Length: 225
Ligand code: DC
Image 1 (cartoon, protein in one colour):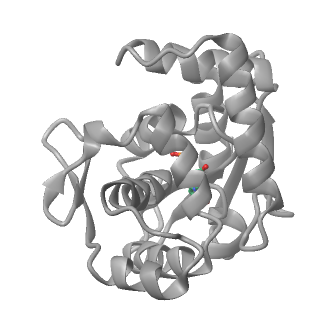
Image 2 (cartoon, rainbow, N blue to C red):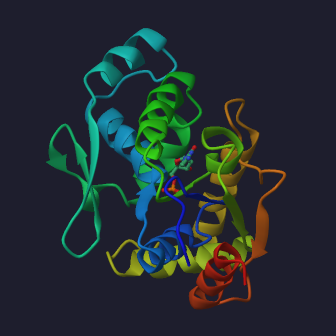
């Protein structure tokens, strides 16, 4: 298949649906760059945690953001490493606390403005698979391929806890369902770019699918099969 130079594939969806696993594999298979925009919101959350402030105060938030530099590097194993002011924070942004705080900071206009600017700049070169909440609706409305992954809340809680087990952060099924419900509500009801499928996105209910099935479905769509 001949790849277009400015190909952008967006993958949006709620917490715990498996976007990262899928987006990473699709990017690898198609030889595209992978961008995890949730990691950017998580980086800001870590910055807020380390420099406690009232995120509702625009002046305080703006001065923190002015001192916040976020960079991505794909290492030799094609793993995305995220840097906050030159510190590798890849392993420090996956805790339940940061998940919660990232959803809070993501409601703030100032935060979104800064991160969307960076995302658009990275997207300028195309050849990218971007995952997040507002990639197809707001950041890359002209993307050639848009996907929206969904799954029941029970299934998403199970997937998220399985992921967290590896780092010793499993919080149990009931707690995780509550966490995800809260984040869904906040991500879907916020005023700034709330989570919803773009009108022209392909919606995939992944509840009963394994990751490979979702990946193959996306690749087939992109290849026009
Ligand atoms: O995908 P994730 O769980 O790593 O995202 C963390 C939080 O960041 C999520 O609760 C909502 C927010 N987010 C967002 O608002 N917009 C994006 N494009 C990506 C993430």
